[in-house]
Amino acid sequence: MSVSSVSSLAADRSVCAPLSVLGRDVTVPLVTGGEVTYAALDYAASAPALQRVWDDVAAYAPYYGSVHRGAGYLSQLSTDLFENARRTVAAFLDCREDDQLVFTRSTTDSLNLLAAALPADCQVFVFETEHHASLLPWRDARVTYLDAPRTPAAAVATLERALADRDPHGPALVCVTGASNVTGEIWPVRELAAAAHAHGARIVLDAAQLAPHHPVSVQDLDVDWVAFSGHKLYAPFGSGVLAGRADWLREADPYLAGGGASRKVTRRTDGGVDVEWHETAARHEAGSPNVIGAYAIASACKALTEAGFDTLVARERHLIDTVRAGLAEVPEVRVLSLFGDDAPRVGVISFVVDGWNSSHFAAALSAEYGIGVRDGLFCAHPLVRTLLGSDPHTQGECGAPEAAPGEKSLNAIRVSFGAGTPDEHVERFVGAVRELVRDGARWNYRTEDGRCVPAT
Ligand SMILES: Cc1ncc(COP(=O)(O)O)c(C=O)c1O
Image 1 (cartoon, rainbow, N blue to C red):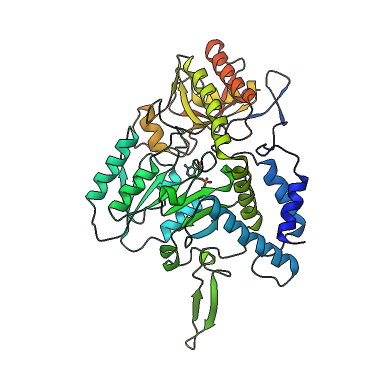
Image 2 (image 1 turned 45 degrees about the vertical axis):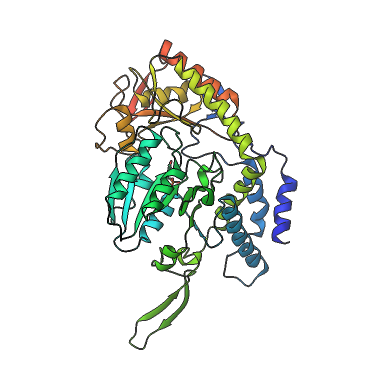
């Protein structure tokens, strides 16, 4: 058995459409009686696994072995698989020849790794609109938080102004999201990268929401690093990616100290220990790597590439149009947007409903219609507060609940979808919104541990 035959074994087993996902036949009970198939409309939090990813992982599982360590056949096969996964993902991201690709746990982990690798005196520029994973890791550096722009052009102008004021001699990093996890709007990454570079700064792209929906080319966008998570890219096996320029990563202390990151460890005569660290990606991958997680991401990258992003984008456009048109017909619904109706977007839409507590609305969608959405502030508190028109600097808990059912909304509801989402799910969602607003909930709800739940 070789690496290529593991892959072909999986391919032979695969009888599914290229982008079909697990869980489409799962049924859930309704409080009002009976069962329905679950409509998973919370892809922006975690997308279901692609069937192809699942098949690939299952085909490899019997051949699983330790990576970079064992002398045995399966260890070598697993090591090959892990390093091949690195190459596949680098190709998917269209990385430069000399870029490094580190397997991490998630986007959050990737951005914290980069934050730990910043050169001394690095200035960081980040919009207040970012997900907390992009907003918070830099707090030990000199951070400038930029106000929410209301157009893509204003985003570029805001960054230009901030960079023009900076100390031009020291290192600087801009961190920007590719697509908002709140509004789904796509940010002008290429233009922001050009502005960053024109002022001698570097840029990292948070592609957690972009990569599952759009092709991401490091070279075409001209970003210095890109980060994303496997579980949002249909590969929920605990891995993420940080890819990009090698120099800052090579010069930084290892993210975790331990085996795998160290090339040579010697005892000094004074009793201490000297360590030579790897200069490759292994420097930041101490401990036993998550080979299944890496393999799953590579499998998802291949599946998306083979299916073709053109097909994916066109299909998603149709779903977005259906949801937006449906919501537009309900006057009580307000869709949250920074850049306006014409902005390019991915399948992530947040909204509030006049007179409804968002947690109550989301609970009713689940309990009465079998629809899974998310409510809260989506780990982007400043942005959601800005969009809701309340104090943008107020902090709350992630997924913070409001008061009781029926009270005015301080949070929002988010619906999100992607590969494998059938028309029926978004049509059921639009019908449910219309019905709930018109007729009200058919069940009673109560607040438990700060969340609305059906009263029994
Ligand atoms: C834009 C964005 N960035 C970063 C993250 C963090 O991803 P993870 O939780 O996988 O680390 C998320 C998660 O929702 C996100 O939407």
